[in-house]
Image (cartoon, rainbow, N blue to C red; front, top):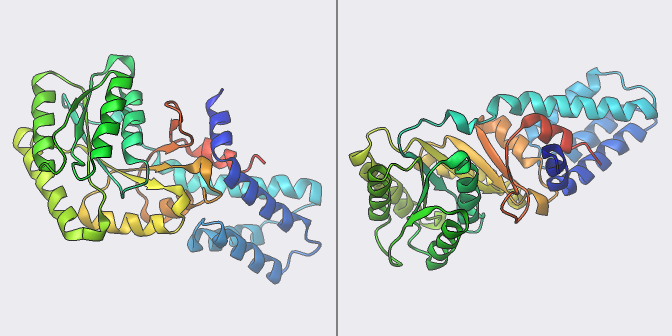
Length: 304
């Protein structure tokens, strides 16, 4: 299956809703203010964001839409070009991650977003071409997270540093980096807790992890990726805002896009925060984490 086909399959539910709504716009006999109001409302309901909905409305209003047969293609083109224009500058090239032997990547996100699974899949991507991967199981609050990460390490032939449930997360991160440095690993992915309901503890935890890894490598962590669940829609925006208060986010990975019609939320987040987008999770298989490509994403949203 080609990459664009994977995007199309993964974004199928979102594409169906967006395509249907835009088709209804084309079928209107008269494109007037009321029609444009309805279109703007539809786009907002589709989670593309208020600002994006307003800007798209202006583009549709300024563009003279032709007959029903050609109007559909024109509308799709306007939408796809807009999405690509907003998100193309946000593509995150993993090849540009600073090589530090190991490069330290903190993984953040609330519980339930698929954080640990995403670490495993990301580890597989980064581990291609013979790169050595090590996981730091620093989400010691949940025994299930440690066990799951351990299973992923075995599955993709990565190493893992872990401790007992309730252990100090910073200690696990320190030991993982120390081991990774001494054994010449290429990438260290550190899982972290996601208990946003206790923001102070979480903030203290992030600060402590950052402090201890800097004792070994003053430039670490080199990346901090935030995992977001697409099925939460607008709540994902709140999560970005909260985590930005805790740490410096250098990239976003959005999961569960195959299970929702709210795939437009990525546009809203990109438009609002302008944070780099690393990858999209579009299924449960090992290979269903796809490196983000704005053109593939924009086209896949309009393929139904």
